[in-house]
Image (tube, rainbow, N blue to C red; front, side, top):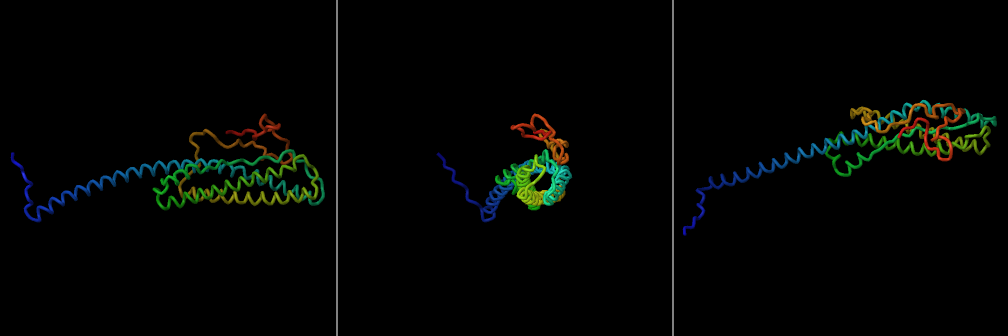
Length: 248
């Protein structure tokens, strides 16, 4: 039996050549692995970016709807100011049949939060992260102000059915009306800021699926304060829950 021993390398040049081949192979393998990781991260970032931006565009649909109704809301606040002025003078006030319900903007941040918590948002550029974070901070402020606003308006409904306010009722209305105006100011500022950040991100309002959308333009809030309730099966009775023309 013949045993073949490994041949010794002939000098340092041969040794470095063998080591160089091994090192070069390792570097190629590492470079290919890094390329694969980079391609994967770019795909994940692109999917996360589109998910977040789609959510932001849908939020903008609701924000624009609220903005379109603002003329009705400010008119209602002016009517309430006039009513309060009469009440403070001890005069009879117009009979308020129905105060109206504010349009509710469905602002969400679930996709942004999910991608941020999973670390996918960190794959965006630093400028993208900053602008998206500011946009979502702004829409969250709008959502918080809207929640407070809805509570305030529900409390102001005590004037419905009254044509004379007592001093205590006048005092309560003055406080609630002041709070309503402040929250409306926060909403308007948030809408303005949201449009600014959306413009910098080159985002436009869009709801491609049209699965859900804001209420129609004929809601009670756009009627006069003394107008009777626009009655439907959803707006009258103990189980009333909607405005005329509301959609899911």
